[in-house]
Image 1 (tube, rainbow, N blue to C red):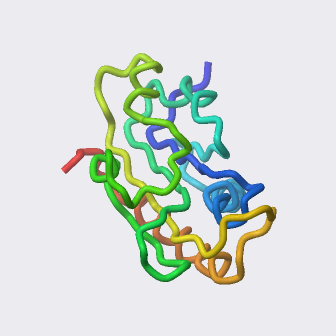
Image 2: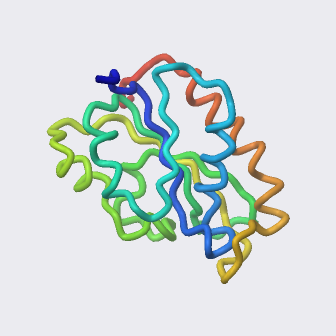
Length: 156
């Protein structure tokens, strides 16, 4: 049986809707990189409930998704999931409440969850990112790598 991963990275989004799929595109790029063995990168899309088993023992979760917060397209945000609860700036966590998903996965404790969001330029039928959001992906990946470099799993 494979050992549970310390950190689980979830690439969320609908790749059929242009910039809405930025989390999926970013997770694919991360999967191509050498990462620590205790890190799992999951291309979730909109199927978060399918990932419950991977979340059962995670000590830290990183979410990558599109996020409308009113800044310029391509802007990268980093916030705690706790700040997202009920917040108007979250455009699409795809109808999921990660707290409920973790409860369904049998978690009584909530690990630290960091959300990396990218302000979309366009959300319409297209399987490619807009040029400005595409240009922000390297900086997004660097921010995620920096987060992975953190050694603390405390929620402080």
